[in-house]
Length: 143
Image (cartoon, rainbow, N blue to C red; front, top):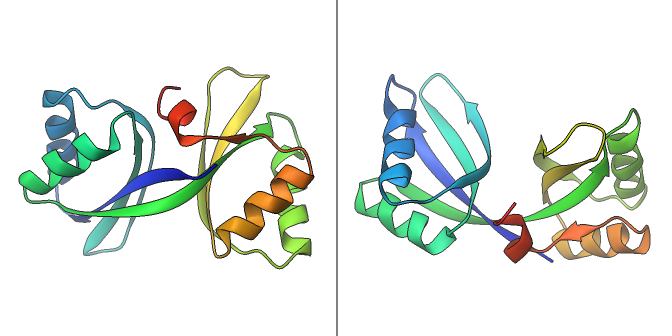
């Protein structure tokens, strides 16, 4: 029920993000979802890709600092209050969301939220008990 995410540490300068996408493109790695957070000096690019091991290898071979993070992908109703319902149930159990990002495949259907939790196993248990669909990594990477 957990998924793997690549975290890439980037200098905050023009063209650095394009270098990442060039390396992945040349090696036929498809980006499924991403998030970029920055400070004045560096950024953290978080990616869900269709081939984690290949992406990790080619990025490292090209001089990038790459980490692996366990995340959880869950379906969220694409309607007002959909995200709040999930965050409320997690909050009631003291589970902290460290960060999250989303993508919508088709408006009006469910969105997919990528979550990083402080207590991943407990979060998965809570979501499943509340009939929230968790998307396994092998399905997420193909979306």
